[in-house]
Length: 472
Image (cartoon, rainbow, N blue to C red; front, side):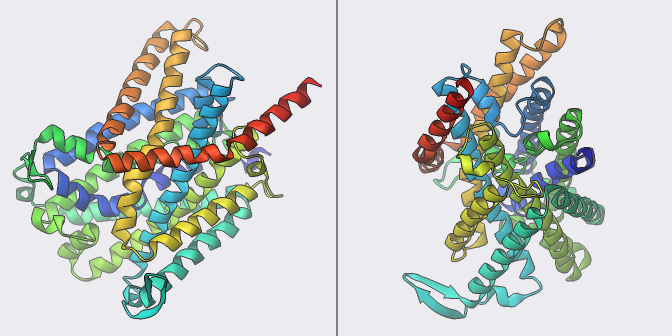
């Protein structure tokens, strides 16, 4: 049975592959809009530190509470009194919100894959009208893009149904190729780097309302965007019950985060030092434009290939993650019971089908919009949904430290873990505050979580029947 478990390389690849997805190809431009070079680097470092603290919390909980494997919804449930209604509601709602954020995020990755594919097939951007459905005009490019996105989604769906292990290995190959490609980009752009493009290093930025934004305001503005790039750091924790060794979960989380952080900072600095600020702000494909400025038109094709490899691997990892969360939650009576079904290969078949149907519905809704609109929507809504599980995990670690559970005779590590957990919780609260300054985004994010209440009676009924059966 152990040979079908996930080892350290595959777990690390899942962490890197899920983090280094669509964000790195689009963030340099969006960050340049809201922050000066100093503000951008400051945001990366603050976010990197905050996510590192969160990763340490996840890694520590995986070792101290190996029974709570399968996702952060377990920590939300354990945060409250055992077998209470509050604990069940907390676990279910965190699992629900995390699931919805996952499959919504899949849409941004899949549609970005299609946009990079259009480099080789320009017909995918054709504005030629095909037909009108209601008030929506469907173009030739939009129709082809929809078919490509659907083919990618369901092609990977059937591959994953053949087993988690095989899909994980495919993600490992794509991740290795992705990291090698980014290293190539970094080495090439080093030759064109001009430090003058980074000056003035720190300067006020004008807001859309005409106000001046200082350095701290720039950090706030960039907080959600940079955090989106790290969403997925908990991937190894979600798959912890499929890991060969629980210690590998913590190692994979830390290794994956540090590798991703080096890639992000290296690429961001090089793009800012390769393209002038004004050109970068108006670029729709900053990495392509940066490489093209160094090696000519062939740079566009090279970056498009790298983007396709990166996004293909990220799509595998995120589809796996999106289906795994409700599957694991259902196995612990914290989600709709049918999601616990699996096929003869051990794949979460029902969860996978429902998750990908929901993703398909989202693809219908965004195919008439620009890829940038879909990406921005996911950043400001899904990221807030991800922060709730991060906060719950940190608070549960604080609870363990104060109660002393699992810390018998380990006062030194108890203090250190407590400090890390408090700082991680404060970081999550800071980003939530920064992201909810837009009341519309906050309300939409909250409605995303609350919508799950509709199905809660199914979960409660299943849990009560299970408990009744145990007592009889």
